[in-house]
Amino acid sequence: MHFVPKQQKLAADQQRLLDLFDRLDSQQRQTLLSFAAFLSSQESVEGEPEEEGIHEPMQIERPQEESVVKAIKRLSESYFMLERERLLDETSSLMMAHMMQGRDAVSVIDELEALFARHYQNYLDDR
Picture 1 (cartoon, helix red, strand yellow):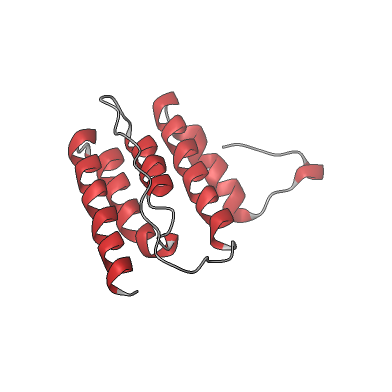
Picture 2: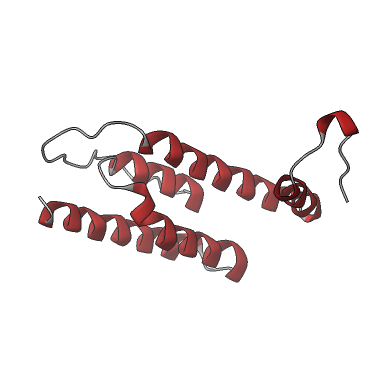
């Protein structure tokens, strides 16, 4: 269990996160930090005003060696016009399938690319 000095008392959910973090190995910790950074970056983009018109995805080439977290970041950047909250559930499910169920990164990234493309098509259909 991780304790914080009295002058730095944490909320219960923050303390629980620290306790869980302490139980992870170094690779799992890095994955958790990357995923938290991804979730945090989504919040900051949500408050930005929407521009009018149809936006084309940015063409960012898929590297040969890519982690699932980096693929999510790449796809989020490519498909900047999509509403992040609509993607969050399915993206999180795929990320967890990779992390917790051991699905290989390549197949998860393939599914992520299809997911973003499908949501982009919905974006076009709604215009």
